[in-house]
Image (cartoon, rainbow, N blue to C red; front, top):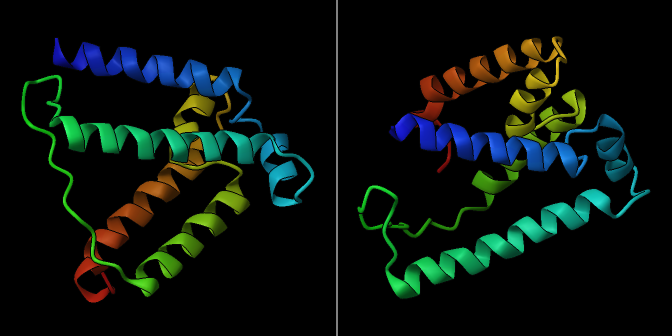
Length: 137
């Protein structure tokens, strides 16, 4: 039953991103060439909603779907952490035309070549796990 809730939420998320054209390579290309506001509007809206929802969770002490309290631990401020991590993420996004969420939506839309990117992302995640203790956090 728990799996079904997450599957439904994932399907709704995927349909929303597909209908908003967030998975379109052309939209991403326009964004990186500063030719269109579309992707910046979507990303900015997501950041704004994230800030609002995190504040609501903190102020009203909301609980998860399982009834457990949601705890958001404060992050230690670290410039290298965000600079290095953000650069690697941005380079991967620019080279492949997809970030982690849309990769699976593209696969669901029949873009089979995205399996190469999913395999590369899994390899990158595994490599991060191996090197995590040696990286700045």
